[in-house]
Length: 224
Ligand SMILES: Nc1ncnc2c1ncn2[C@@H]1O[C@H](COP(=O)(O)OP(=O)(O)OP(=O)(O)O)[C@@H](O)[C@H]1O
Ligand SMILES: [Mg+2]
Picture 1 (spheres, rainbow, N blue to C red):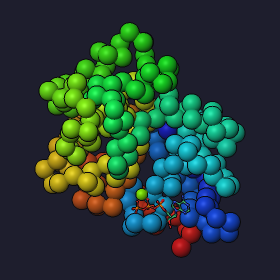
Picture 2 (cartoon, rainbow, N blue to C red; picture 1 turned 45 degrees about the vertical axis):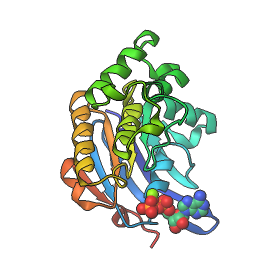
Picture 3 (cartoon, helix red, strand yellow; picture 1 turned 90 degrees about the horizontal axis):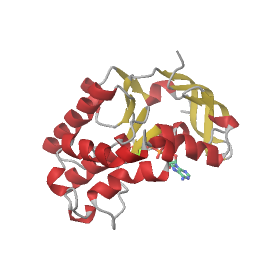
């Protein structure tokens, strides 16, 4: 079976001759729940951006669902991400002038292949709204939500259309203990239902108990 994510001899530098990442090997299987941690500034977000095809490796291979990203141009990488990857950011990136429901539906409207069928986008959005406890907020503007509520909307937006890979970049770092636990519970419930590949980044090592496997970025990254 093809792996979900595979990096080999992968290097990345923002500036010439100063590698941020230098990873010999990283493989994540389809359906795996992986926790990646490491100190601030060590390259966690950079690695996620390489996998999502936002950035391109300076050398080596990054394969996502069997596709070699180095062979794809920027727009083909954007297309692959739009169709196959749900991205939850640390600072949610919700669209302020859209409602909760409209924000959640957006990925399926932008990427037609992300919607299993165009007629069920609304049904999918409503199912996610229901299971993430957002029902009373459906038509509210996202600017009127608490941080914990916004992060649940961001989670629903990443999950709509059932992308094969979910990437989460410190999605709980702005949440208090209670909302943090609630968010993790909801995310894991969704994983139980859909078994997507989950790559979750945090510097909070306590969260590793939710995952199948833990990877320390400093241990796999040889740049220092
Ligand atoms: N756009 C950029 N241009 C130049 N250097 C960058 C850029 N983004 C990040 N860096 C540098 O690359 C290194 C890794 O940054 P990155 O954001 O990947 O770290 P991180 O592990 O995600 O940190 P944090 O836990 O604080 O989010 C840092 O030294 C950072 O200064
Ligand atoms: Mg980061």
